[in-house]
Image (tube, rainbow, N blue to C red; front, top):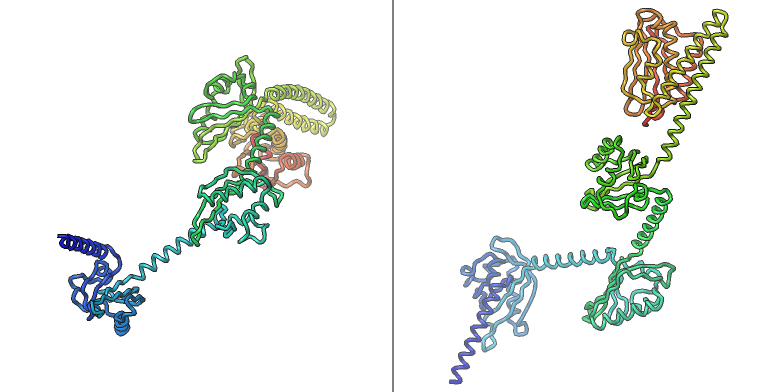
Length: 594
């Protein structure tokens, strides 16, 4: 009974072994082949089917040479002969075999002899491993190792390794700067190195953390460490961590990886310094500032803004409610449009406007508003800065009143000069001189009066032309034509152009297109390429023109005043068909808003 049970158990063990062997044959990527002493195939694994392209039912019973033959048949025979030698029970070598389609396969062959009870060769198990796959895996592994090594070496993180004997054995590129003044370095005791780098008690504390991690495997991390270096006169800051690792010799070591925070902390300190200087500048200038969160509508005001706008610091409300309710009704429409453009088109808001405060006080504010963008590029906030310019506006109004008074007295004085000139003339030639002088003074007066009336918006070019041509109102639009876009001239340019127009009109009346009943004058102006102001006076239909033999006061006025006041070029052409005068000036010397 006992013998039968033992036999049954042996049978089960044999079946299990056979099943395990079958599973290995099915799952292995290697080609596993069994051949008899005559090299006929006894078994052919699934790996062999894939590697050599022959199905098992075709391969079994056929000579192995026929299935995977190569030109080096003799080499293969020699290997089999060596495998049959009792001293070479297992033999491994590399060679080339052939796929069914004739393509070569680099393989590593392991041959194991199977002998009968007499020790004679009964069969052989041959395992073929595809070296191409093995080499690809090895190449991929080496490449991955190389990439990993490169990342570690070039990383902004510092990495260094201490072995089981507490000696420094590796320093990555990112860590070299820390150790640059220590020689020798590699192989040196880490405790000694740390005491060179850092003062006490920090050096001893760091050493204890390293040794504790090495002994227990418990990692240690320090965040935002800041210490004065012992070997150089600088303060450095780090995030650092130590972890235990297994070294190539099988013993434990410690790897420390750290990130140098010194530059970031220095930048943060500089940023705080700039913010403090900005805060001092804002306080010194008494600037009001506010920031509106476009998602929540919440508004933050500084103390100056609360004071200037008379806002209770406990008050809660949106920008539209607090600011909008204070804007002067006369300025509400255009300021609302500018605010909308800033929100929708990212156009900076810059304007001076009035506000009416809860105390019924009217103030002038100079306001600058801009959108702020978050890290994602989306406009998330609206920021504004403003200051009270009420006193400046009152001063400007007083200056305007004083200028009006000066202008009034100047006109009276010019009238006196005109009367004196007329009464002084006794002879015909003197009377002609007086008439010309009086006309010139009147032209200067007309320009001066126009500048006083239009000083806030600038002097309109069309109005200036009309004022200088007022003596020819009966032929305006019939023989005198003017055309150009709206251009607001600064006072200096308006005065110079006004005098030039008067001189040209006077000359046309005496000698040119306006001296008969047929001649015409065309006055045009334009802005060229957004940079130059062009104005021309063109005569036609008058008596033939001859250039003057000498320059008179009129030419002096045209050239000298225009060139000096406007930094312009003047081209005066005495063409036979009529005088052409053209002024070409930088826009910044002409336009009121430039």
